[in-house]
Amino acid sequence: MPATRKTAETSSARSTAQPPPASRARSRAAKPSKAAAVPPAIAEERRRIVEVLKPVVEMMGRMLGPNTELVLHDLTQPDASVVAIANGHVSGRKVGSTILSGPKDDRAFGAAWSAATDLSGSGHSVVNVYPTLTGTGTPLKSATVIYRDADGTPFAALCMNADLTVFKLAHAWLEHAIQGAPTPAATPESREESPDMDLLMGEIIRSAIRTFGKPVQLMNKEEKVHAVEEMLRRGLFIVKGSVGRAAAALDMSRFSIYNYLDEIRKREGFTK
Picture (tube, rainbow, N blue to C red):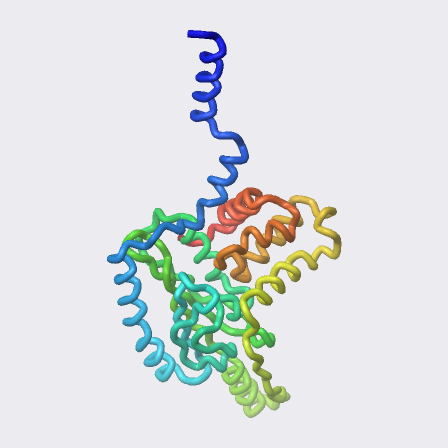
Protein backbone atom coordinates (compact mmCIF):
# COMPACT_ATOMS: atom_id res chain seq x y z
CA MET A 1 0.00 0.00 0.00
CA PRO A 2 1.39 3.43 -0.90
CA ALA A 3 2.55 5.57 2.01
CA THR A 4 0.15 8.38 1.07
CA ARG A 5 -2.89 6.09 1.25
CA LYS A 6 -1.78 4.60 4.61
CA THR A 7 -1.37 8.08 6.05
CA ALA A 8 -4.82 9.12 4.87
CA GLU A 9 -6.47 6.00 6.32
CA THR A 10 -4.64 6.42 9.64
CA SER A 11 -5.75 10.04 9.81
CA SER A 12 -9.33 9.04 8.99
CA ALA A 13 -9.39 6.36 11.70
CA ARG A 14 -8.01 8.80 14.26
CA SER A 15 -10.69 11.32 13.32
CA THR A 16 -13.41 8.70 13.74
CA ALA A 17 -12.14 7.51 17.12
CA GLN A 18 -11.55 10.96 18.61
CA PRO A 19 -13.86 13.81 17.55
CA PRO A 20 -12.32 17.28 17.67
CA PRO A 21 -13.04 19.45 20.71
CA ALA A 22 -15.61 21.56 18.85
CA SER A 23 -17.61 18.45 17.97
CA ARG A 24 -17.49 17.25 21.56
CA ALA A 25 -18.66 20.65 22.74
CA ARG A 26 -21.60 20.60 20.36
CA SER A 27 -22.46 17.07 21.46
CA ARG A 28 -22.28 18.10 25.11
CA ALA A 29 -24.28 21.24 24.49
CA ALA A 30 -27.06 19.28 22.84
CA LYS A 31 -27.45 17.02 25.87
CA PRO A 32 -30.45 18.69 27.61
CA SER A 33 -32.57 19.38 24.54
CA LYS A 34 -33.64 15.79 23.84
CA ALA A 35 -35.67 17.11 20.92
CA ALA A 36 -36.49 13.72 19.38
CA ALA A 37 -40.11 13.12 18.39
CA VAL A 38 -42.26 11.96 21.31
CA PRO A 39 -43.69 8.44 20.78
CA PRO A 40 -47.50 8.45 20.40
CA ALA A 41 -47.99 6.36 23.56
CA ILE A 42 -45.95 8.82 25.64
CA ALA A 43 -47.76 11.81 24.13
CA GLU A 44 -51.10 10.21 25.00
CA GLU A 45 -49.92 9.45 28.55
CA ARG A 46 -48.91 13.09 29.02
CA ARG A 47 -52.21 14.36 27.61
CA ARG A 48 -54.27 12.15 29.92
CA ILE A 49 -52.35 13.13 33.05
CA VAL A 50 -52.70 16.84 32.26
CA GLU A 51 -56.44 16.41 31.63
CA VAL A 52 -56.82 14.52 34.93
CA LEU A 53 -55.01 17.29 36.83
CA LYS A 54 -57.06 20.18 35.40
CA PRO A 55 -60.19 19.60 37.54
CA VAL A 56 -57.93 18.99 40.56
CA VAL A 57 -56.64 22.56 40.14
CA GLU A 58 -60.20 23.93 40.18
CA MET A 59 -61.26 21.81 43.17
CA MET A 60 -58.21 22.64 45.29
CA GLY A 61 -58.50 26.32 44.39
CA ARG A 62 -62.07 26.42 45.71
CA MET A 63 -61.21 24.34 48.75
CA LEU A 64 -58.16 26.34 49.82
CA GLY A 65 -59.72 29.75 49.20
CA PRO A 66 -58.81 32.90 47.26
CA ASN A 67 -55.41 33.41 48.87
CA THR A 68 -53.91 30.19 47.49
CA GLU A 69 -53.06 29.91 43.81
CA LEU A 70 -52.95 26.54 42.03
CA VAL A 71 -51.14 26.41 38.69
CA LEU A 72 -50.72 23.52 36.24
CA HIS A 73 -47.81 23.93 33.81
CA ASP A 74 -47.16 22.10 30.55
CA LEU A 75 -43.35 22.13 30.58
CA THR A 76 -43.19 21.21 26.89
CA GLN A 77 -44.55 24.65 25.90
CA PRO A 78 -42.81 27.17 28.21
CA ASP A 79 -43.94 30.22 26.23
CA ALA A 80 -47.57 29.38 27.17
CA SER A 81 -47.06 26.85 29.95
CA VAL A 82 -50.07 27.66 32.14
CA VAL A 83 -52.84 25.26 31.07
CA ALA A 84 -54.99 25.52 34.20
CA ILE A 85 -55.02 28.00 37.08
CA ALA A 86 -57.16 28.80 40.11
CA ASN A 87 -56.97 32.12 41.98
CA GLY A 88 -54.60 33.55 39.41
CA HIS A 89 -54.95 37.01 40.97
CA VAL A 90 -52.32 35.95 43.52
CA SER A 91 -49.56 36.19 40.90
CA GLY A 92 -51.47 38.00 38.13
CA ARG A 93 -51.36 35.04 35.74
CA LYS A 94 -53.94 33.32 33.55
CA VAL A 95 -54.18 30.36 31.17
CA GLY A 96 -51.61 30.91 28.42
CA SER A 97 -49.11 32.81 30.61
CA THR A 98 -45.43 31.97 30.19
CA ILE A 99 -43.49 29.87 32.66
CA LEU A 100 -41.26 32.87 33.44
CA SER A 101 -44.19 35.02 34.59
CA GLY A 102 -44.48 33.21 37.92
CA PRO A 103 -43.07 33.99 41.37
CA LYS A 104 -39.45 35.04 41.79
CA ASP A 105 -36.85 32.84 43.51
CA ASP A 106 -38.81 29.70 42.65
CA ARG A 107 -36.70 26.69 43.71
CA ALA A 108 -38.84 24.44 41.51
CA PHE A 109 -37.06 25.87 38.45
CA GLY A 110 -33.80 24.34 39.63
CA ALA A 111 -35.47 21.00 40.28
CA ALA A 112 -37.18 21.06 36.87
CA TRP A 113 -33.92 21.82 35.08
CA SER A 114 -32.15 19.07 37.01
CA ALA A 115 -34.89 16.59 36.12
CA ALA A 116 -34.77 17.62 32.46
CA THR A 117 -31.02 17.07 32.23
CA ASP A 118 -30.91 13.80 34.17
CA LEU A 119 -33.45 11.32 32.86
CA SER A 120 -32.35 8.49 35.16
CA GLY A 121 -35.17 9.22 37.61
CA SER A 122 -38.47 7.40 37.32
CA GLY A 123 -40.61 8.96 40.04
CA HIS A 124 -42.22 12.37 40.28
CA SER A 125 -40.29 15.11 42.12
CA VAL A 126 -41.70 17.03 45.08
CA VAL A 127 -40.22 20.41 45.99
CA ASN A 128 -41.57 21.03 49.47
CA VAL A 129 -42.52 24.34 51.06
CA TYR A 130 -40.21 27.23 50.14
CA PRO A 131 -40.54 31.05 50.04
CA THR A 132 -41.10 33.00 46.81
CA LEU A 133 -42.16 36.53 45.82
CA THR A 134 -44.74 37.87 43.39
CA GLY A 135 -43.65 40.35 40.74
CA THR A 136 -44.80 43.15 43.05
CA GLY A 137 -42.87 41.82 46.04
CA THR A 138 -45.61 40.05 48.00
CA PRO A 139 -44.13 37.08 49.91
CA LEU A 140 -45.61 33.66 49.15
CA LYS A 141 -45.25 30.16 50.51
CA SER A 142 -44.88 27.72 47.60
CA ALA A 143 -44.64 24.00 46.82
CA THR A 144 -44.38 22.11 43.53
CA VAL A 145 -44.77 18.60 42.12
CA ILE A 146 -42.91 17.84 38.86
CA TYR A 147 -44.44 14.97 36.85
CA ARG A 148 -42.43 12.57 34.66
CA ASP A 149 -43.72 10.35 31.87
CA ALA A 150 -42.95 6.63 31.46
CA ASP A 151 -39.61 7.52 29.84
CA GLY A 152 -38.58 9.59 32.88
CA THR A 153 -38.93 12.94 31.10
CA PRO A 154 -40.50 15.81 33.12
CA PHE A 155 -43.49 17.23 31.25
CA ALA A 156 -45.81 18.92 33.77
CA ALA A 157 -45.69 20.75 37.09
CA LEU A 158 -48.42 21.43 39.63
CA CYS A 159 -47.60 24.47 41.79
CA MET A 160 -49.22 25.91 44.90
CA ASN A 161 -48.55 29.51 45.95
CA ALA A 162 -50.11 30.83 49.16
CA ASP A 163 -50.34 34.57 49.86
CA LEU A 164 -50.05 34.88 53.63
CA THR A 165 -50.77 38.62 53.74
CA VAL A 166 -54.32 38.19 55.10
CA PHE A 167 -53.16 35.76 57.77
CA LYS A 168 -50.35 38.10 58.80
CA LEU A 169 -52.82 40.98 59.06
CA ALA A 170 -55.15 38.79 61.12
CA HIS A 171 -52.25 37.84 63.36
CA ALA A 172 -51.30 41.50 63.78
CA TRP A 173 -54.92 42.40 64.58
CA LEU A 174 -55.15 39.66 67.20
CA GLU A 175 -51.85 40.77 68.68
CA HIS A 176 -53.15 44.34 68.81
CA ALA A 177 -56.40 43.22 70.41
CA ILE A 178 -54.61 41.16 73.03
CA GLN A 179 -51.48 43.23 73.72
CA GLY A 180 -52.23 46.65 72.29
CA ALA A 181 -49.55 46.36 69.58
CA PRO A 182 -49.91 48.68 66.54
CA THR A 183 -51.70 47.21 63.53
CA PRO A 184 -49.99 47.84 60.17
CA ALA A 185 -52.14 49.31 57.43
CA ALA A 186 -52.84 47.09 54.45
CA THR A 187 -51.60 48.46 51.14
CA PRO A 188 -53.40 47.60 47.91
CA GLU A 189 -51.37 45.47 45.54
CA SER A 190 -51.37 46.37 41.87
CA ARG A 191 -51.51 43.64 39.23
CA GLU A 192 -49.86 43.94 35.87
CA GLU A 193 -50.25 41.99 32.67
CA SER A 194 -47.55 39.35 32.25
CA PRO A 195 -44.87 40.53 29.81
CA ASP A 196 -44.06 38.24 26.91
CA MET A 197 -41.38 35.55 27.00
CA ASP A 198 -38.73 37.47 25.06
CA LEU A 199 -38.92 40.47 27.38
CA LEU A 200 -38.83 38.27 30.47
CA MET A 201 -35.76 36.38 29.24
CA GLY A 202 -33.96 39.65 28.54
CA GLU A 203 -34.86 41.08 31.94
CA ILE A 204 -33.64 37.97 33.77
CA ILE A 205 -30.30 37.95 31.93
CA ARG A 206 -29.70 41.70 32.36
CA SER A 207 -30.63 41.59 36.04
CA ALA A 208 -28.22 38.71 36.73
CA ILE A 209 -25.33 40.49 34.99
CA ARG A 210 -26.14 43.92 36.43
CA THR A 211 -25.48 42.62 39.95
CA PHE A 212 -21.73 43.02 39.47
CA GLY A 213 -21.79 46.51 37.95
CA LYS A 214 -19.13 45.79 35.35
CA PRO A 215 -18.87 44.75 31.67
CA VAL A 216 -19.04 40.98 31.16
CA GLN A 217 -15.52 41.10 29.69
CA LEU A 218 -14.23 42.08 33.15
CA MET A 219 -16.23 39.46 35.08
CA ASN A 220 -14.26 36.52 36.47
CA LYS A 221 -15.45 32.90 36.49
CA GLU A 222 -16.92 33.10 40.00
CA GLU A 223 -19.02 36.11 39.02
CA LYS A 224 -20.23 34.44 35.84
CA VAL A 225 -21.16 31.27 37.74
CA HIS A 226 -23.14 33.44 40.17
CA ALA A 227 -24.93 35.14 37.25
CA VAL A 228 -25.79 31.76 35.69
CA GLU A 229 -27.08 30.54 39.06
CA GLU A 230 -29.35 33.59 39.34
CA MET A 231 -30.69 32.89 35.82
CA LEU A 232 -31.30 29.26 36.81
CA ARG A 233 -33.17 30.22 39.97
CA ARG A 234 -35.45 32.50 37.99
CA GLY A 235 -36.31 29.71 35.54
CA LEU A 236 -34.48 30.94 32.46
CA PHE A 237 -33.02 27.59 31.43
CA ILE A 238 -36.37 25.85 31.15
CA VAL A 239 -37.01 27.90 28.01
CA LYS A 240 -35.76 26.68 24.64
CA GLY A 241 -32.89 28.79 23.29
CA SER A 242 -32.07 30.30 26.68
CA VAL A 243 -28.61 28.73 26.96
CA GLY A 244 -27.46 30.30 23.70
CA ARG A 245 -28.89 33.66 24.70
CA ALA A 246 -27.21 33.55 28.12
CA ALA A 247 -23.92 32.48 26.52
CA ALA A 248 -24.01 35.42 24.11
CA ALA A 249 -24.79 37.88 26.92
CA LEU A 250 -21.93 36.54 29.07
CA ASP A 251 -19.51 36.39 26.12
CA MET A 252 -18.87 32.67 26.55
CA SER A 253 -19.69 29.34 24.89
CA ARG A 254 -22.82 27.24 25.37
CA PHE A 255 -20.53 24.44 26.53
CA SER A 256 -19.27 26.65 29.38
CA ILE A 257 -22.84 27.49 30.40
CA TYR A 258 -23.65 23.77 30.66
CA ASN A 259 -20.50 23.19 32.71
CA TYR A 260 -21.54 25.97 35.10
CA LEU A 261 -25.06 24.52 35.38
CA ASP A 262 -23.67 21.07 36.20
CA GLU A 263 -21.39 22.65 38.81
CA ILE A 264 -24.32 24.49 40.38
CA ARG A 265 -26.52 21.40 40.39
CA LYS A 266 -23.87 19.32 42.17
CA ARG A 267 -23.18 22.08 44.70
CA GLU A 268 -26.80 22.90 45.47
CA GLY A 269 -28.06 19.31 45.27
CA PHE A 270 -31.18 20.06 43.24
CA THR A 271 -33.59 17.15 43.52
CA LYS A 272 -34.19 14.86 40.56
